Length: 64
Length: 254
Image (cartoon, rainbow over all chains, first blue to last red; front, side, top):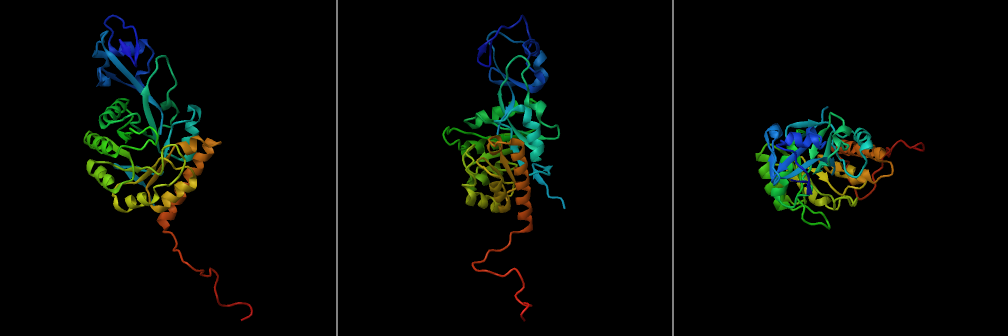
C-alpha cells in the first residue's frame, strides 16, 4: 500500500483506524484521502484497507 | 463602544490575523498572545508517522483556526484541501488560495472565484486571497465570500502597500470585510492600511523574520489597533498652507 508517496506494509484485514494507530499517526488531528476520496473520520473503523490502496494522510502545519 | 470585526457572522475583537509559518512551534503561543490575534492561519501538509509535534498543541484554545489551501493550483485542488481540513474538526473557516505562478505567488483570481462558490455552498466561511480587482471582488461576494483578502505586495516580500489605491477602491465598494493579506512588512504599513479603512490585516513573514518575533507581533497588534482607532476617529484634513495651532490673538505685547 502507498501512504504519502511511500510503500508501507499493511497488516491482515487492517482497518484504517488500526493502520493509523499501529503506525503512530495522531488520529485526532489528521485527515485521510483514500484513492483521492476524503474518508469521513467516523468511518475509519469500517474502512478495510487493501494493498492497492493509495492513502494521503495530512495534518496542520504552520502556514500563512 | 464595541467595534468588532464580523466574518461570516462570527465576531472578533482583534483585527490582526496572524500567519503561523516560518517560526518554531515553541514560540507560537507567545507570538499569538503578544499580537492579541484571535485568528491564526495554518497549512495542510502530509503527516509523518511516529508521534511528531503538533502545532495545534501550541495555539491557545480561544483562537479561531483559519486553514489555507496553499499548494492548490486549481479550484478543484483548493476544494479538496478545504474539505480535508474540515475533517480535522477545527471549524469551517477556510482561506482560499489558488496559486499557479511560482515566482510572484500571485493568486489565480478566476480559479479562486470557482473555489469560493463551491465551498460557500458547502457551508464554509470562505476568505479568498485575491489580487485586488474590483470586478473579481464583486464576483467573490456574489460567490459567497465572507471576506476578501487582497494582497498588498507579493507574499513574503515585506514590500508593503504596493496596491494601496486598488485596495482603497475595494474598501469603498465591497460590502464584506476587506483584509489586507501578504506583503505587509512593517507595523506602520499595517497602520496605514487600517487608517484607510480596511477591516483587518494579516501578516506572517514580517513577524517571523523580525529579530524579536514576539515583540514584533506586539508591535503589529498595536499598529493595527492604532490604525483602526484613527479610521474611526476620522483623519484630520490636509491643507496646502499653514494654519496656526495656537491662538493668533492675546499676544503679551497687545
